[in-house]
Image (cartoon, rainbow, N blue to C red; front, side, top):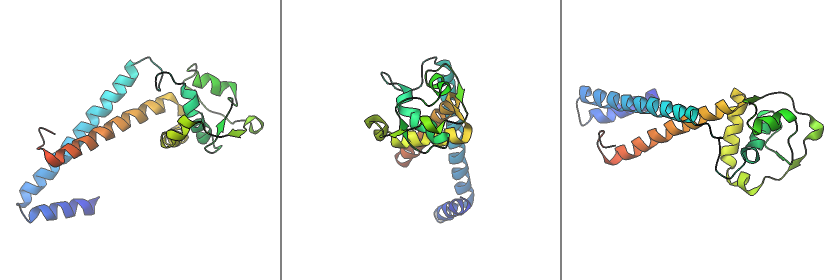
Length: 169
């Protein structure tokens, strides 16, 4: 990162003074930081305000995120026909906020992923990694969604920044 900043300021100094380049870079970084804080806060506030289930309309979250939970519990990215434990079933029915514990090996029989899981395999893996790091809970998914919102706001700002000035982008 330091090399990138140095090369950016060096390229800028060829055309402008050093003070102008440092001010331009600092104001751009400040805009990105402010934008990310605002969008992350707005995402968390919106997700905490909503009392609806996480997921898409007309779809069971258990069907999509069951391989993620198994991945987070160390079983690999597999799908199963039924829940290995009653605690996991309660978690996916939104009766529990989190889930932890070992899974019985005799009740886990891998089956092929359904078409929806196959189409969203990167989301399934991302949620599985987040659950593996922070624990299997819906709060971790809310923070992941807020982070993705902040990241998309920053990327959108940077794309618009290519063709517009800072105020319009």
